[in-house]
Length: 342
Image (cartoon, rainbow, N blue to C red; front, side, top):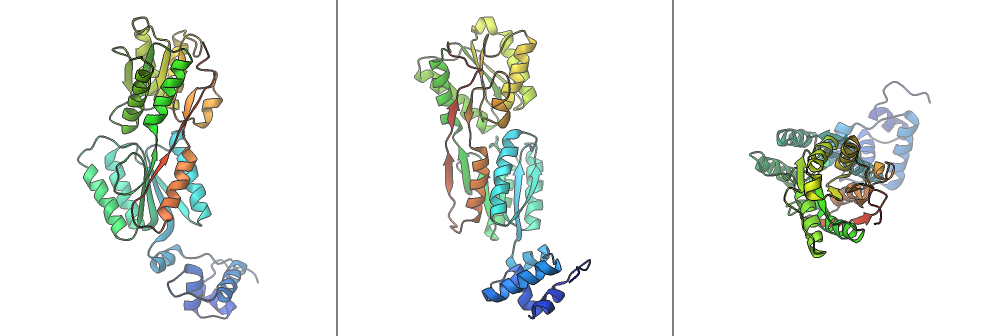
């Protein structure tokens, strides 16, 4: 049968020999179930005719659109794009679509996007990003998410706890501590940290873990050994330039950048100053994004299961248990050429 430009549900119902109401229940889902043979017959007929389900109708019938809404800080950052890939894999497995927005770490944008998501009535809202210092919008953001959950939606944060919502938490502190141990064992003695702003909890945890790891090996950071800048590649360049200005004073032999992206910027700053990464000064990052192994020298880093974080967030979002659950994702150190054995 040739496809028309717009196949209606009535046409599908007539071709399948059922009522329009039965066809709707079979295709859009309903608390009133149809038998499996009728469901399959309607589905096959719809496929043959080229019928596309009405998502608005599904939203009315099911109370939510077949969509997972995801809010990330910066989709251009490989950290967030890797997590988003995991979300998409989990959503695809569940037969759901993904809609995505970015906040650029601006709380006013985060609030506006969550309001927009609520109006779209998705199955779940997943918010990805480090906790920030509270501001005047923090309480309203949490209230918007709480209201959405109270209306039957599901909220998952990929962030730091504690949280009143389902939580996927990456072990930033433990990963940084283990990295410090590994770098000392590789011969590091005088350390610097090229860090993102400590207004982000991720940087606070990674700096604390690293300094505590050094302390467990009997070492400490000198005054001025932490340079803060934006949590970006350019921020890494800026922070490393600042540390190089104090290189002799610090007797700097190893630098920890609190993300791989910052480490890439730090490596560029080193080369610009005539310093060879991995030879003159060792360099390490955090996250193990895809490019970390492909740069020269390959970057020592802390592996974070980013795609798994996104995938597991979808699983939490679709779980039936109403009680908030916290899932901890471990990390592991990967040693590469940017921190050669001394």
